[in-house]
Image 1 (tube, one colour):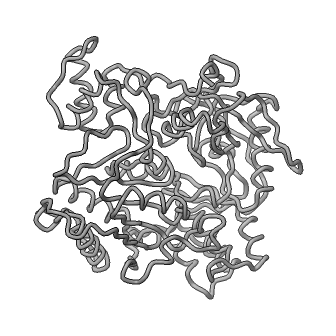
Image 2 (cartoon, rainbow, N blue to C red; image 1 turned 180 degrees about the vertical axis):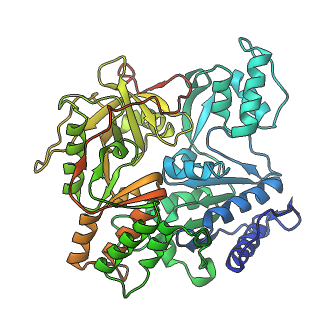
Image 3 (tube, rainbow, N blue to C red; image 1 turned 45 degrees about the horizontal axis):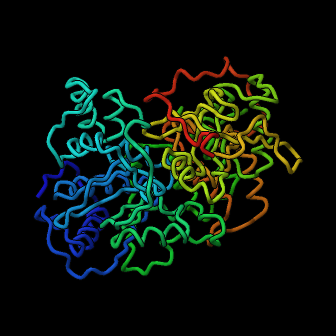
Length: 509
């Protein structure tokens, strides 16, 4: 049994015990840290829900450590060795790259739901290195790679648990060792799904096909996926399949941002009273700022969060004008949001390539400049383990009061992008930024409309989601103004990775 370095609260301990009981039926005994025969083979699902700061991430991280200590293989999506009958597998997933990167920052090897649906096909020569790093083979001899290069790969993997990153540290490019992608054929055993409030019915059904045992971690106060009538997947679970973390642990750290988020649960607080609370918090703590204008400098890396689409489009054009962006091209450093893949069904492999590299709907991207070929863009995918790619792109900039967007340049087909300097609060779910600007006039507009979602005023759900996106500092912007930038857009702050991967070339399409 592992020695625990953290102290669980009563509700966390109960949740841990409930998950432990579930895992026991899946052949994993955490009490004695060993694997056992499957007890019944039935599918099982459990939800652990709680508001921001209730300790869901810490609980997930501790469960992961104990499961790995019991001998379970953790599947990250970047490499998967041959499954052995005497082993069990665990995958930790999130709906977006950004959400997965939040878990990775806590030492949890998370990947996206899209990434686990497909597995990479490795060149047989380099697969020997992957097997060795994963502990399934002896140190290989590979033509063209020195012992020093293999040492670099080994050191990198011990720290980061990423096979592609380790191979890149050895001096290889993704196109050297990954020859393609294939749909997952064999199921896995256990799936931990973070930010499960974002799951829709289709994703949930796909996950149940892969994992006979699923544990969902989610926040019931967030916004439900569009088209699901305000209901989240775990709302339909019976009480025996759901446990609620009620204690707010991060409150003990005197976090004014979480104080404001949880104050929204008070039915007696209206919008005006809440805004006075924001003003009072800002007067006593610099982690909350009552902003008189939108800061254009912050928009380059963390979008302004809005409710109305018209507000989003207006702020995007104000941002581009402030930085002097020409109407017919993008400047390096401009933020983008992936809006999906525009490829016909016959190009399924190209779609898999793009999605596997992080270009899934909702992914946050920074434009680095044009690619070598017309219609290609060099991009930095925020939160991806290999962030730099070159992809055929269709970039759309929506115009105020016009149905058709302006397209500065485009490939015939490829990854589609919208501008990312402002996004709706719905699309911001699952993401976090150090600094978050919330456009309060939009929240006020929602309050005036008097709409409700799942029995709670819509404005409170919007405010809760927007506020809890902030890791360190919250800007509550009360006026429709934009500050001038302090300097030009830059890209030198972005973490560089292996040589950019080129995806969906026009010759192949």
